[in-house]
Length: 139
Image (tube, rainbow, N blue to C red; front, side):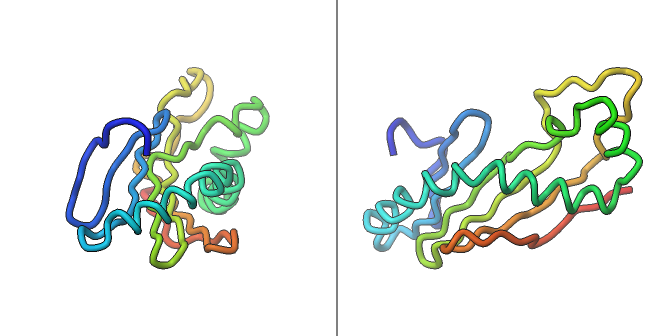
């Protein structure tokens, strides 16, 4: 990858793209080959972010209906969530996404704030299929 890594760990190399931390899962043994595969996974995984956000919002809407209804009315619903982290695993071809509150969005005082500690983990297969892996729901 271009640029310096934020972190180099036993099981991954960490970079930052825009506001998203991206982890390339690359064990030290075979790191060069694993990193090469992870790099080819990056563009499709990055391009999938709008779909990932849609999947996360749909899950969140089931849990926090009134929050989303008010933001739908205000036309701010599409700015509520962001991808904070990604993990690309070249051994499986799978990408994991951590989706939570969009901290770059300033909520108007007349609207409810994003639910505290609410986050959704979305998985993407090598074929591009998306599903919910886990959801942190602090009500």
